[in-house]
Amino acid sequence: MLTDKFGRQFHYLRLSVTDVCNFRCTYCLPDGYDPQQTRGFLSLDEIRRVVNGFAALGTSKIRITGGEPSLRKDLPDIIAACVQTQGVNNVALTTNGFRLDEQVQDWYDAGLTQLNVSIDNLDPRQFHSITGHNKLETILSGIDKALTLGLPVKVNAVLLKSLTDSGVSAFMEWVKHTPVSLRFIELMETGDNPRFFEDEHVSGQRIQSKLLREGWVSVDRQFDSGPALEYRHANYRGRIGLIMPYSKDFCATCNRLRVSSTGKLHLCLFADEGLDIRDAINHSDPIVLQQRLISLLTQKEQKHWLDERKTGATKHLAMLGG
Image: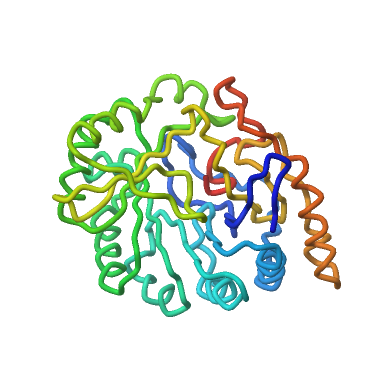
């Protein structure tokens, strides 16, 4: 089992398969994706080796991220490769939903077990203003298809100060009738957005207090769960989760590592650098990769330093999929 020097065990790999994204979200890529240099993204075979290496060390959950992973034509093959890896029992996908409506059946057929969709506002005009795309209706249609297939769906919404009150109210009404897990995520500062962060960051604690006042009760975390604190209510079909990276002891339950689309291990989303493991990925002996991962994990720090406004190497969230 991958275990760090603080006793935290890592069952969960967030695997980026591209850093390309076709949305222009105001908090991430307001000017769009900038392909300034040639990208050598991990091949399908390299992805198999990465997943096998982590699985051999106890990783049981893989989340495929981007950028936007559906921009890779071989995404169903990537999903299938993860699903077919011995020891992996949960294969999730995070997507902006651009191709969800047309492709969710293919992802399901490949073996996908969980879907996360990013929707920051349920007002079509606000959605377009945030993302640069008028796709809300088809994304919601895609979510309906996923639910019909039996896929558990989580919806990620970044909290923005300018939209919080109206946006939260609309989401709460939607969750009353829609069986999804909606997670409100505090805006995080990255290298490219310090001014935007200063203007738009809002704590999730106000929503947490509102939930508790209105009778929502906490849901026990699973060992491979992400960082959300999740709540349920008897009168709501859906659940509410809160991801509050600026809260006390947020990193104490960290159970996830990240590999970038170019083969770098990131011990934290906000680590100072990615650690190149591509040579180990492509070594003929799979033990070499496993030994490298064990060795590099000794460098993981106890916490991120977001509270000190240190964002490390993360210029924007599309680099690693959050």
